[in-house]
Image: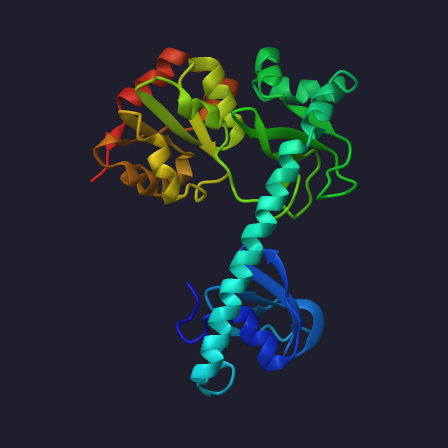
Length: 307
């Protein structure tokens, strides 16, 4: 949350120091450092903090924005103006996301990427090596892109994120990632989504929450169990919990190093929540360790309630 005296950190920096900030993520903006210049080294977060990225000629300063003026308190008029600007920024962001989602619903790039597999047998083999059968590749319309739209020049393996026949984004898994990370979105700035959300409509009495799309696809393929996946161990939103109200049991099965995060998510479901602990990642249980569906069900049977 923003610092109490800085209702809109972006407006504060732009008005007080005369610089322009651009959005680089949902909660982060960047621009020239107010101390040492540059172009995009000064980062500001919506919770009211700032940081100048370290490097040659960079000052590396960091702290709370409301301490930048040596304790000078903003006037009530400034606070009111910043609150109004924050509301306006929220409305603009909401409208922008709606526009992007409408564009994605009309997008057919995922079908093109899926068709590319016919001309790139090495890309199809990648999906096989990840433990997926051809029927699973076709079911999820997995594909191959020679140049990722948000990482130009990098080939990628593509994973569409859909729900009830509509496309919400495409996840690009870079074939040869650099230090910037393995995954890129097809379109930047879209809200995070549940993967395999169609399983929310199934009549099963239990559902799994997994960490990562590949785990969802492998576990679904091998067990037939209803499951969804988040794009990372901290990505599940509390606002999503009501979407799982129809299920009598909710099993959270994250990677072995994410037990704390799994417990936190399971608590959202009260007595229905269960934490599944496995010594290996759920997909590697099959692809590297020769696990079976019956053995996987044993881990579910041993799942624990949370306090």
